Amino acid sequence: MRGDWVVDPAPVLEAGILVAVVGNFVAAAYAVTGLETRYPDPVSGRTRARFLVAEDEELTAPFAGHRWTLGPGWTTAVIGADS
Image (cartoon, rainbow, N blue to C red):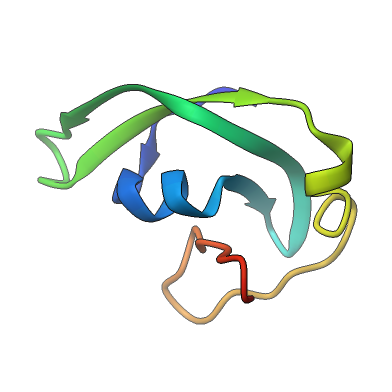
């Protein structure tokens, strides 16, 4: 999955995990290794970020293939080490 995410990149870089949810299903989970670019989205006025990721099954296995319900209005969530 590639994409430019509307999210503050700092918490994602700190957490080190990017989880992509489609509907209520975790479609992909990646270990974040860095930030490729970030830029303002002229339509939404928010920042978009493109991350460098690697497959790390040990780190992402707890998330991949599971259902995950986000609160109303949420499209992304940041996973912290203590989550």
